[in-house]
Image (cartoon, rainbow, N blue to C red):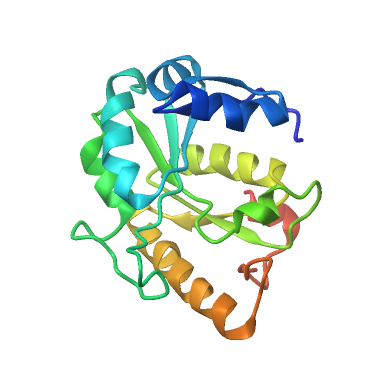
Length: 194
């Protein structure tokens, strides 16, 4: 909807095709899609994160990888359960080779909100070890109808990852069907992406 050229990868090309066709996107296996992408966005459950990263590791050197993984552990997804590394983002940092520009983002926005064609009313905290890589991911978040906000270094991703479990609990407690999100107050729109 934002006018970007999108390709969807999966371990199963048939699964990628099923997700891509309704939106007119290209598709293929994870490795091929990652190899041909400028920006690679990882959107898998925590249990598939390491296998997915291992599959694409050698073809993403020199690229920006945006990891959206949240360490949810079923059946208690409304309870914060960060991995041994401190966060899914830090687990990804260990799993990826040198030369990959890793950013972590999109943890606290429900998928159904991102499918809306307008402002979804949520902010996206973006974490990465360089301001430049965060700025690229912030621009991507802004195109997705959210407001991207610099959240600091990659290690800070633990806060947003943990907040996802809190939001799931809020959704259940208050019957929020469309998914509760976060909005940071006190930041002017133009200064959010600076």
